[in-house]
Every structure is written in C-alpha cells, then in structure tokens.
Image (cartoon, rainbow, N blue to C red):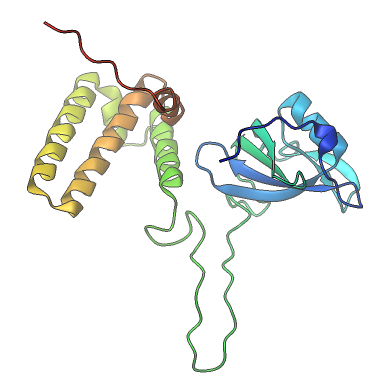
Length: 237
C-alpha cells in the first residue's frame, strides 16, 4: 500500500481546457454523489472556503454547490488520484446532490443490449432506489440515523422512536433487552435471528447516541482511534 502523500495544487494535471474532473463522495457513507469539473480557481476556492466549488462549462464561470438551492456541500477532505488528473472531494451534504432532487446523480441503471432471446445482465439499482440489499452498509446506517434524527426534532404522533426519546429509562432498558436477545440468538446459532436482533440493538444504540447529541461520526472516531492498538489489560488483583 502506498504511503499517504501531500500534493501541491499546482501539480494537478489539468486537461487542455484547464479542467480536472471532481468526484464528490459522501464523507460518512462513501456514496458517490456527483461528478463535476474544477479549474485552478475552483479548487483554490474549495480549499480556502471549505465549500464545494466547481467550474461550469456551459456558463464558463465558477459556481458554489448549493448557493441557490441551499444544498451545500461542506468539504471534509480533498485528494487526487495517483496520476493527479482527477479530484476526490469527501463532503457532508446539506441536501440532495442532483438537480432532480435525488440524493445522488447516479440513479439511472445501465443495461446492455443483447441479441433477441438472450438474457441481459442488469446493473444493480442505485443506493436507496432498489430492493433490500442494494445499498452499502454505510448508506443504510446513515439513512437510519437521518430518520432517527428527524424523529427527535419533529416527533410524529405514535412514533416509537419519539417515545424512546421522551423516556430515558425506557431507552436504557431497551438497549439492555436487545443486547440480551442478541446473546440468546447467538447461542442458538440461527444467522437470520442473529442479524435481526443485532439490527434491533444497532437501532436502539443509535437512538441512545442521538439522545446525547451523538451519532455515527462520534462512533467512527472512537473506532478509528483503536486501529492498530491493543486494548489494555485490566489491572490484576
């Protein structure tokens, strides 16, 4: 694996038009949101402001994502590929990336044309638009967290999640119950039951985190801090 390197913006390999493709990725889920173009000025403004800024080929001008729609993208990191001829922006999106209102611009499946009578290989549906199992684990967790956060700020009548937010004792009780049920399922060895009970525990854990103003971001930081480290042994008697 290559070591992480720092690249001077001046070293970016722009094309003959002075442009470089910029892939935009959700920093939390890894979902690819859109593809746009940057010139030197757009990249410099992105780095200076932390707001995703691009170059419009049709208008021949810079544009800041969300400056009219409100669907801004706060940039968490900027990287280039090994040839320095493409940019990757990892962002926190404040709304849909696509002008159609879709979360990602990549929502149209591509199918190969085959001779009559043959079976075409169908591309999987885009994240969030297809059947269960088409989203990545990160996208599924992020979607669940968004629903839980919404239930906290705008609790609908009869919402079980809202009920949990209103009752601290119930929140703690349910986390304990779900953890116990997961252990029991594990002892039985039924994979479907294990997955179901684990999902219950994850859901209730996310509710508990949101009750403290926390979420997947804080969980990720805690996990990353443990990478390559051994858990300290408990003190002896």
